[in-house]
Length: 198
Image (cartoon, rainbow, N blue to C red; front, side, top):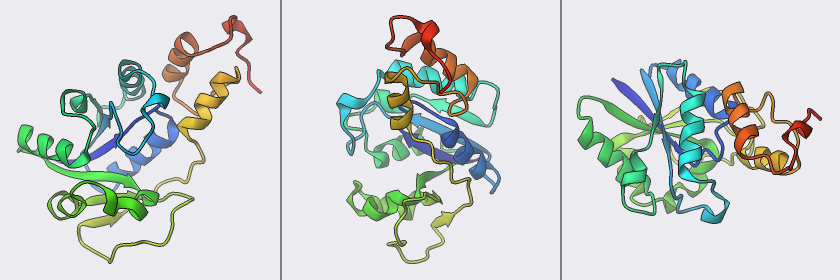
């Protein structure tokens, strides 16, 4: 099978992530494996919620979508979590599948800073989805870099975390199952009944 590897912090997962995953299915990928990163080398670890919570929310988000899978494989790999290590692990563990990395267009600008970035492109390839803040493409056209169309949803995990800290609703930004998990586990107000739509 052709597998799109969507690696991220998912801190937390939201509807924008799911829209991107579904868009890659529409261009011929059989499944999308959403790999939860325990430690992103390009992000502040202090901002990350516990891995177990982030994994659980991804599992809830894909519960009724058989072509989307939650993967915790990076939790068992050396840290920090370098994408090339993850891709090599998946290729070795599942030789029957073809893996390609799914990233946002904005990540291309700094992609040369990623560990063994050329090997990622040459051996696995990239699926690139659009982002509002994306700069001019820094790479020449390549058969190993595929651009897809996906909804430009202005949703961010940081916005969701901020809304939760301010006791504001995140309805419509995350799947309903994830919303309930957030209400039960991440509302900072002493009274969860105060959690209201704006």
